[in-house]
Structure formats: structure tokens, C-alpha cells
Image (cartoon, rainbow, N blue to C red; front, side, top):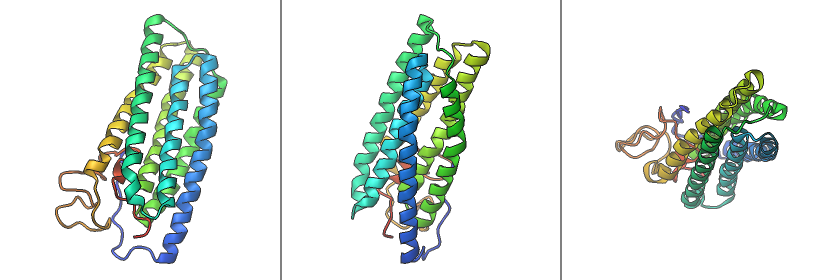
Length: 255
């Protein structure tokens, strides 16, 4: 996911505008959590019925997305958001690693054991809906977060966008299985989800060490990378930081 931050004006938004943006971020986070809870329940249930590892993995990823969005909501509810970020990063990272381990084991078992996933019309509809809804939520939150100067809000919007990519992978896997009877497509799609989860987990785990923001987002001095990251850490542009990786101590709700 390559969604570079855009440098903010030095003055930043006015206090009144910041309150509007913070409220908007909270509403978008609430909408993301609500949708992902429904998505997780439907995906895991449908995946269990159809013996679809990809669908179950997609549902578990939705659970992690809820935890990521909840971490941002928790952070914005506190008086010192930066102090809460390290714990949230580690929880999200461990969740991704657990998801990757589970999906990998189940996918290998399905491929080696010859287990075949059944057609899932519910899964196809869910993947298509997520493919349409998630980019809209991601864009709205990223736009508000960038204007507000909250790296955690922007990072969480990237996590929401991740669901779009996984929805496409899931849709292809389920579609190939349903149309052509290619049962191997389901566990292969699940392995793609697992690989993405490992990448996101690693970036979340490293986020607090690399992207330690000590200045406003627009500050490009002191050898930083233009996003406020430490020298040598290209945390924003072109690295595709994960769920809260770009957020390392960088949320600035209050300026």
C-alpha cells in the first residue's frame, strides 16, 4: 500500500477545524468498526460452512481491522494519545502474526490433504461489497487524517484499504472455485492473505521504533524524511506502512 502523506501547511488547521476533523475521524472509525464486525461474523460463519480457509482468514482479518480502528478510537479519546500508541502497535502486530500462522497452517492442510472448499454465494457477495465500500471509508479517513495531521488516523485508513486488496484476492479465489471447480484457488488465496498479514505485522511491530515523530508533519529539517520520521526511515512515501506503522508516536490530535 503506497499512500504517501502530503506535507501540511505550517500553520495547520484552525482549532475549530481541528475539532470538526477529529469528530469526523471518530465517526469514520465508528463506521469502520461497525462494518468490520458484521463482515467478520458473516465471513467466519460462511467460511466455516463452506470449509473456506480464505473466507475464514478474511473474517479474522476483519477482527484485526476492528482492533486497529478501536486503537485509534481509544487513542483519540485520551488526553495524551502519543503515550498509548506503542501498546496498540504491539497488539496489532501480534494479531497479524497469529492470523498469518493460522491461515498458513490451514491452507497447507487443505492443499496437502486435498480438502475442497465449497461454493459460497454469501462469500462472493461479501467480497464484492467490501471491494466497493472499503475504498470510500479509507479515502475519507485518510483525507481527514492528513488535514488533521494525525499519523495514526492515516495509518488506520491504510489498514482499511488493505481490506480492499484482500477483498479482491478473496473474490478471485472464491470465483475460480465456484466457476471452474478449482478448489486449490481457495487455500492459495488464503496464503496471499497470510503473506500480507506477515508484512503488516512486521511493519506494525517496527513502527514505534522507526517512525518516531518529534516535529509537526510539515517539518523537513534535522535530516528527516519530510514526514517527521527519523533519518534513514522512509516511513511515509513509497514504503506502504501498515496498520499503525506510520503512527509511531505521531498522532497529533491537539497539534
